[in-house]
Length: 301
Image 1: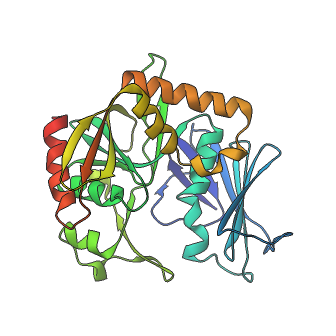
Image 2: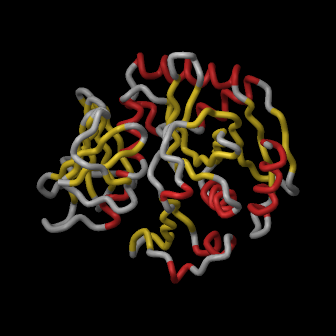
């Protein structure tokens, strides 16, 4: 049995999860269990790579040809692999760092955005944007410049008793394409692959640069395409559009119950009113992340 901590929770797991912060058995954090069960085969044909279904007390996510993930009551994740019994592959455990993690946090009433976060001068800078726009690459650039790492891919927000929005520390690792690894001055061959089927590399963050505690939110940066690098302030309605679209489970909103939908809208409305949110346009080339990182440093200092 393994014990880990992430996003303010303890995970009691019978699966080894590289990159998670390990814990001793004793903890005061709420406990979420991670288990596996017998191999699974769908009862109906899957027409998309990832299919999500609302079930009693939660959601079931089917990843075609890989596994099924059952997330219930904000307290348990159960994996049923599609392949033969044996140790789970790197591919099969990946959703525990992504969509399954986002789902369990959502069930615990946290706002979860598809984005990455660093802390500049102790304040959280969240980077969101459409898939492939360089969220993780920019995060790695800021990390390489000496800023504290908070989380990659899954960013979770909570509101404390004083009404202050804070960002929960996640899992100290960053997924990077080979070009992104080279951008921050590292050799891809020195970093392990995410999976033989996914040619991304894993950059594991040391305790020294991982800020393993909540940090106050300062700025949300929306990445978008453009002919040149430009920073734009956003009005409240544009902020709402981007925040709702940037929710990690935006493509799975059909699994939300009415109260979940209302809570999501309320959280996004609060962020749109109270948070500094900017949009940065840039061309997609190898020099853009470094230039954007410098622009963010100047803007957020």
